Length: 322
Image 1 (cartoon, rainbow, N blue to C red):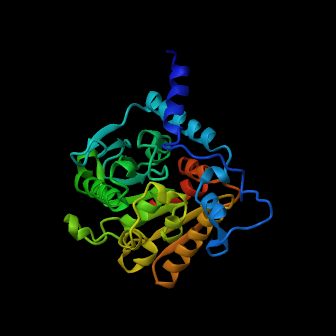
Image 2: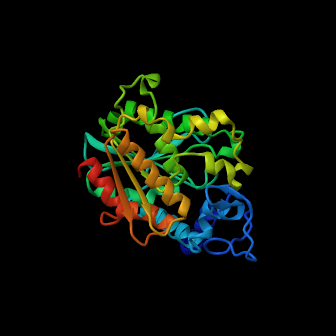
Image 3: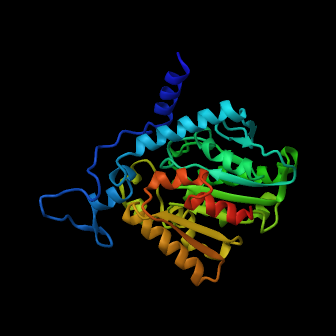
């Protein structure tokens, strides 16, 4: 197999959807003119499902995922493979550590998206180079897909918390500054990062301000509408899970400054979720900044994390102070 064919094959594997999804028209689904019963606010079931299915609003999702997979693969040839570390005994409980050539450097911990079902840390490596070149370590977490956790998002969130705690406790071992650990996540990873920001870090033997800042990109912050959408087919929602995993309802637990970002070409629900989360944080007196990516689709916002002049790359560097 040639290197080019390996890249194409790897991109296809990483970008492939984790479960079969019926094709959907771009934007709000076409109908015969009759709208179904309203399920959430002014959306019927077809509209709500489309609003929580990125492919409905970004027809080139697979192409972007393939490009990011190739860029991440290329980075390993250009800069070397990341250090692999584990934070638990589970087969998915590991992380990729991309080291900057600086000691006592800040650390950016990234939580990948993928509808809580797919993608991985390896595919997130494309963004590492920007951080490394500016004197920060980049750590991409792995964790189990929710279908291997019985559909329980709380178990997934706990893996992410343990991964973050491991990074803070072991930062000095890879040249990081444990007092300058920052968190970011995109899409379902943005949700998990926001949940992590509500953590009582004393449960992990850490101070309350263990995480110094969070960048939540294109995420979901209240799971009520998500529970009503097609995603309930693989998530075992309960009232308790919906509440515990909705960071919008636990603003009092957030101790770090938060940057919330979204793209103007994302689905209406992802835009609404970002705006309402940022507004709620501001109303609660929490330090918050809302970053808007003009003419950016959902996956384009993720890609912008690796660009110092993109909305998320610029926001991450500003948050860290680089």
